[in-house]
Length: 283
Image (cartoon, rainbow, N blue to C red; front, side, top):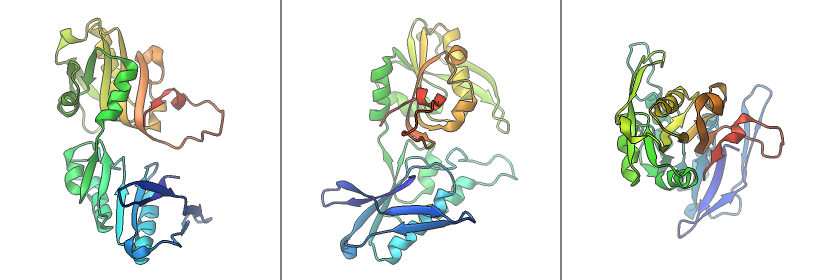
């Protein structure tokens, strides 16, 4: 389930409450049950955790939060590792809708005590969401570093390099690219420091992966400049990665992919193979 409910104890310990049940009517509207019987509502502290899979969950979040508020729960926080629409943090053309701004307005209208997020795409989303707090991403990236054992870290652009390089002592560099904003096509791509990656294992680090075109070209760029192997860590990973070339090691040259927050539902009770199973989930 994408939305879970936790009680917060005196020392901020969290206990999951298996008290939310969401079903769907034939017209695709939700039937939601939230059981909070047996709690002293006047002192209850709750946290909602929303592990985003699709936009329809936002309506469920609104219904559940407003229900708890109507019941008199005085303190409700939200943990939302992934911020939907976060990549749309600017508009470049008059016909573009600033979806991130309006999404943030919806979240703010629910008046959470806090909103915890993981590795926000940019400071714009952090500025737009009230009482937002960043979860420390460094320990998660360190787990990927410990597993892959790179000699050098690589960030796809200078902004990512400024964000991540100061977290670690390993040498690092970044790519410089020009892109068509409307199509997303990368026009040109080159290394800021060409001699740093030769004969080195390199781990690429960034916040999110969709189809993965940037990382495909990054891996090629690194290998063309002498890297012996490449790995990839992304905090948030969409299932759209399966529609690109990253999971094909022969094409991408990427030895291992890591993510802390897979943005898809995987039924672990089935033995049916999925290419997404090749991605190591860190948590």
